[in-house]
Length: 247
Ligand SMILES: NC(=O)c1ccc[n+]([C@@H]2O[C@H](COP(=O)([O-])OP(=O)(O)OC[C@H]3O[C@@H](n4cnc5c(N)ncnc54)[C@H](O)[C@@H]3O)[C@@H](O)[C@H]2O)c1
Image (cartoon, rainbow, N blue to C red; front, side):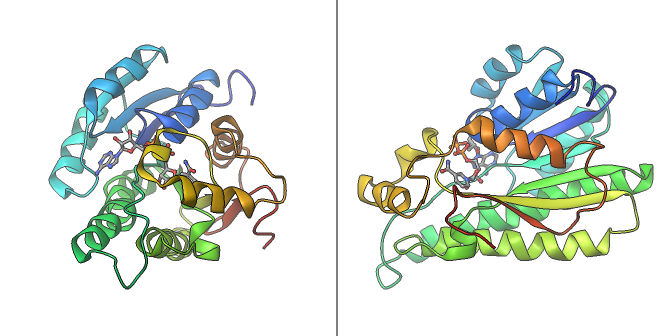
């Protein structure tokens, strides 16, 4: 990524306080972009924003339309309207079988990982369309392509993100707003704290490269998809699975 790739552009990153979202934000900031880190953990988002330069932190719950509308207003006032959205906020939910999966946990995973992506895309896309340019990158997962045992809600939510991205990409295909998603295999972040050791080992055992992904590897692809260099891809799912899902 060149130093000026994102000059004059503003990127909103949900779940940007840490992990994959923060790595994407750092990559866009390194290319000269302004950054708004939207996260429900606003203290951590503030610390992270301080490390990025031209960046703000905004407290957001991606499951709340009102919270997202307030965040759009705050970002436009303090920074500028969003040219780029990276939707990275997400949780894993419990590692257990479908038969034993608690219904409330199922609803929470779908609410954050899928409805949260729908709501954050819907909060930001109209402004992009009216300005005639935008790049949206949703963070899906290889779980949405392959389906991981003992992670049914997570796998279903990420398959949903892939389908949602196809729909919105086609709806906006002639507007200048491109909408894609990435499907990483397991990447070592604080999200590991939400998973069992057994589940992490299972996911690692499925990767032909026999290693975890790095947040920077995800950020590199996301940054390209979020940049003006990406011009003829929309509605697509880009693989980052070390050879696990070669389709
Ligand atoms: N780490 C992996 O192995 C991996 C692999 C594939 C996909 N992903 C996906 O990448 C994304 C980021 O994962 P990560 O590993 O960086 O996780 P992480 O836990 O390090 O970061 C997730 C961030 O999302 C925020 N968040 C959670 N719920 C929120 C809500 N309702 N509103 C606003 N913010 C909220 C958290 O506060 C946190 O800062 C997730 O969507 C995850 O499913 C992760």
